[in-house]
Structures are given as structure tokens and as C-alpha cells.
Length: 120
Image (cartoon, rainbow, N blue to C red; front, side, top):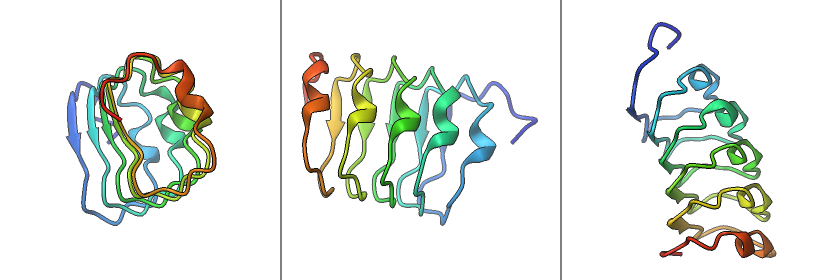
């Protein structure tokens, strides 16, 4: 995907993706659907700072530290993963909608900073 630079919406749902390294330079994306894949981490998303809507539902995520720079995100679906820790959400203070259903959360302290949440 190196030749594609100015994409705003990308739907890669319902594939068998295990790696999304090819997305790291798509910094203009504002809507990204990666649901129903086989992703175990999203470290490649660290540069995608313009994302407003991100769907990561139904993957195998155990770590969401790759989200920490997405400070403009409004909608985030992390349902049905393998998350026990959501500390990677601490800086996402613009979130309005967050789905965490079907995970293995042990604590939710990171939600304290997310004062703009309207739907959880």
C-alpha cells in the first residue's frame, strides 16, 4: 500500500490479517475497519494519528499500546478480543463511543481520564 497516500476510509474487515505493517504510512486515514481478522497487536497503528473511527472488534488483541497516539479518535470498538489491560486508552480523551464487550478485563482504571465518553 506504499503507493496509496490520501485514503480516508479503509475497510479490511473479515479477512485473515495477522499483520498490518502496510498501513503505517497511511496517515490521512480517518475511518479504519479491521474487525474480524487475526490481529494480535496493533503497534503498526502508532502513526495513524488522524483516525476518528476505528473498529478492531473480533481479533486476538492482547495489547493496545499502539493506540496511544490516536488522540483525535471518537469511536473505538475493541469488543471480543483478549484484552485484560486497557491502559493504552489513557490518552484518548476525545472518545465518545467505546466498546469493550467480550474481553478479559481485570481493571478499568484507564477509563477515569475518558470524560467525553457518551456510550460505553
